[in-house]
View 1 (tube, rainbow, N blue to C red):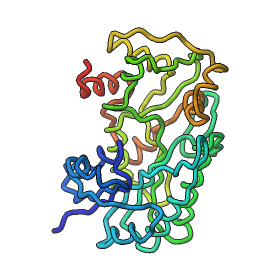
View 2: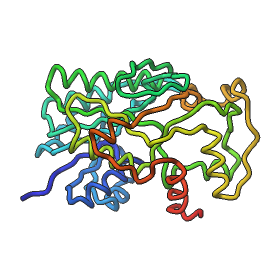
View 3: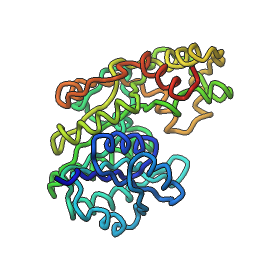
View 4: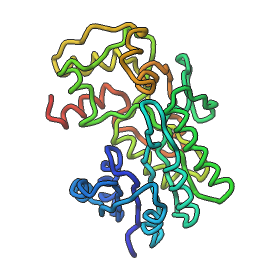
Amino acid sequence: MSAERALVLGCGYVGLRLARALSAEGVSVTGTTRSAGRFGEIAAAGARPELMDTGDPASLAALLRPTPEVVFDTVRPLRTGADAYTVESTRAIVDALAERPPGAAVYVGSTSVYGRRGGEWTDEATPIDPVSPAGVARAGAEALYLDAWRVRGLPVRVCRVPGIYGPGRTLRQRLETGAYLRVDDESHVVSRIHVDDLVAGLIAAWRRGRAGQVYLLCDDRPVTGGEYARLTAGLLDLPLPASVARADIRHELSAGAFERRTADRRCSNRRMREELGVALRYPTVHQGVPAALAEEGAV
C-alpha cells in the first residue's frame, strides 16, 4: 500500500512542525515555500520542498497531481500595508482545491475573527465579529473556504487558532533584550496553544473532523499577559519590565498586535477534546512554557 500523501502550504513555524509530525506517522509530505533558500529546512523536517506562488494557481494545481489525502493551508492573508490585508491568495488556493479536491482540506485560521469578547467564554458557536484588519481578513478567508464547501463540496475543516507558542516562539528574546512591552491591565486573558498540541489538533481535524465544521484549537486555561510574562521571566531568572498603560501602548503597536494583547477572549477546547479526541501534551502554559524553553536550551 502506498503512503498517504499530505501537502502543507506554507512551511513556516507551524508548517515545519506539522511536516515533521506527519512524516513520523509515515505520511509522504510535500511542503511549499516562496523561497528556494528554505528548501534545506523543509527537507530536514521530512518533507519534499516545492516552490509555490500563491498568486499563480497553476503552481498549486501541479502539486495536486496525484491527489493528496489532505492539504493543510497555513498561508496567512497577504499583508499589503501596515494594517491592510488581502485574501486574494486564499481565493486562488480555494479555487485550485475546488477544481481538484483532496481527501480533506484543513485551513489554519485565527481566533481574531471573534473580535473583543470582554472575558466571555468563546466557542465554535460564538458569532464572529472581527474588529482588527487581520481579523477581518481572516474572516474573509474562512468564508471563501466554507462557501466552497457549501457550493462546490470542498471537504474543508476550519481550525481557529489563538496565540501559538513553543520553542523559538517564547517571550525569551524580548525579555532578554528589553523589547517586551507589558500592559498594566491584569484582567485581560488570552488563550494560547503549544505548537505541538496545535499540530496534533490539525492532524486530528484531518483524520476525525467533519467537512464544513469549525474547530477551535486551544489549551485548557487562558491566562493574562501578566501571568504569561511572569512565568517566563521567572523560569529565566529575568526581571519583568515596568508596565505600560493601555492608552500608551496603543501607540507602540500595530492595530493587529494591540488587538491580540487586549481582545480578552476565553476560548473553549471542548469540541477539540470531545469530537477530535485530542489529549493535550501541554494543558496550560505552566507545562508548555518550561518545555519550550528547555527545547531552546534556555533552562
